Image 1 (cartoon, rainbow, N blue to C red):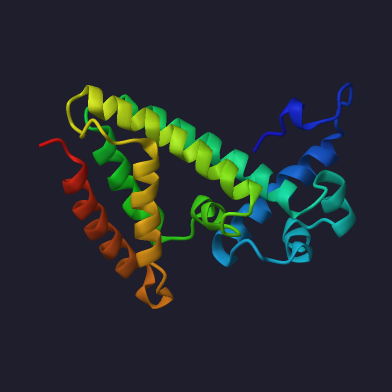
Image 2: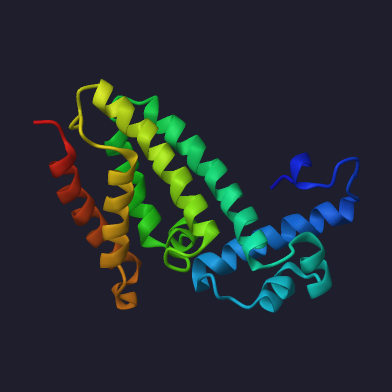
Length: 195
């Protein structure tokens, strides 16, 4: 995990312990948010990171700032995955295969994408970035003649929203979630492919 210079005040070089604390907070928050949702108490995040609450608030002015930092880190990985999918022969199929495992377990991006209904700036930020990434993937698949030409990145995000909605039953367990996700994405893919 890396603290980027743009996250720091101009002309300020962070102490090593401050960098470690920030990284520990983002790591702990990402784990807890993915497994328990966005309402996890910040005191628990600080405790899991083995820092005090004052340290948490020195790095992040509020919950949204911490959520955004976690989202940015996850979205960097998402962007890398999209680039990898786009370099393949079947980009959408590759995304859907990986999504089966992604939906089976806890997912920070899924949690942040659902966060707070339509009122959360973090939610809007995550959804815009994901829709843009999916848009690149759709453009590549359309260029390869694999997808309908009327599709957009927002359509792929909609498919993922529908799958996430269907997985609302916590009693499914990882295997049940994996099976339901595979079936739902298979059904969705058949409607997205070019005929």
